[in-house]
Image 1 (tube, rainbow, N blue to C red):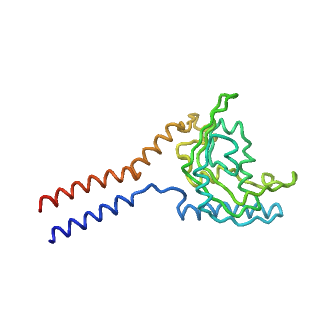
Image 2: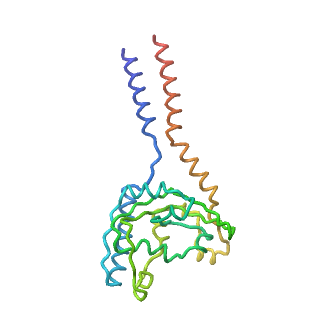
Amino acid sequence: MKAVSSIVYLLLFAINASTSVRVKRGLSIEEQNKFLDALNADRQAIGENMGITFEILTYNKGLELKAENFRCDGPSQQFGIVPLKVNQDMKEVMDSDMLSRQFFNPKNTKIGCSKEKTCSHTFELQGKTAEFWGACSFGPLLGYHFDDSNTPEKNGMPSYEKYGELLGVGQYSAWTSEEAEAKSGKPKNPKPYSEWVAEEATVDSKGSPTGSSRRFISLTLFLVSIIAFYF
């Protein structure tokens, strides 16, 4: 009976281990706090410089899911979504200040971000492929008009890329800044989008529910064979 009890215990342990192995999505509590502390400090500093009251942002899981799940196949789908890292082609067609300014809408009270979101879109006329890594969504979706003489970028607004780097979005370690490239004389290009996605897929497959199920089936068959031996 002791042997049977041990086998049952092992079987239950295998079920628990198999169902609990999942890939962590979204930001951890530690990442949320680090991100919010930095962004809210910047917002308050900009607000003080501008003489405008900025709301304190809180983290929202619903907006995190919105950033993770929005479709990349049309500009209309990107309303309210701000990337955290973009490639050079995207920088050439988008105003960096406008992206950064999205983090400094005084009326926003909530934010949610995805580190895993990736998008790629080829512009037919230019023949260029814009790519980005990571995304944030804000709420409520309220517009705010700044006076041309008193804008965030004129009062020390940091780049949106600061927050992507803070969170390690898009494998920042694989990127080299333009300043570092100029000093070294050996510029490094970011990993191709396809390569980065392939690596992510490899990680996902190792920790996916499907992979866990296969491990569970193997463990179950092994334990069943032991039970059959005893009986």
